[in-house]
Length: 130
Image 1 (cartoon, rainbow, N blue to C red):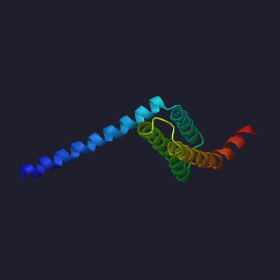
Image 2: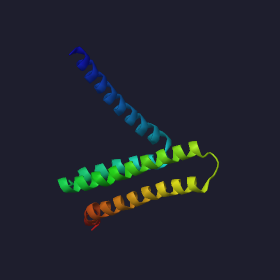
Image 3: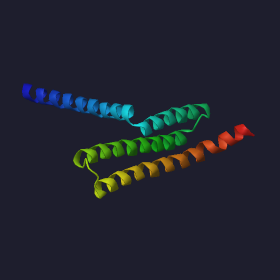
Image 4: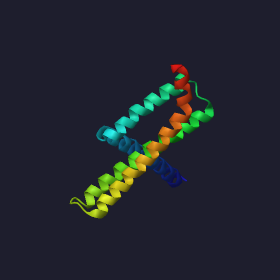
């Protein structure tokens, strides 16, 4: 009985530690990656606009998915770049391809998020200007 309780506690400690590692990874990327810093500022602006324009629940879900997708793509891109630099310090065409494709994924996600933003915020901003 005590062994089972200890195993559960160790499992919980490992789960908590894994969240800590994940948050540390986000923080390290945010401190070192200029593009992620840009996305962080954009996220704050979008959240502010969302509150200002009183988005519906559906609009918040779409904005959240768009922002989350961009952040995910950027974090994966950062990881791929770091790992590629580690295993291929000298230029190699496949290493360059991996980095370019990962960067392309960020571009696709950012463009899709921009479209979501234009659909949701565009009419509201235009209404303010007129």
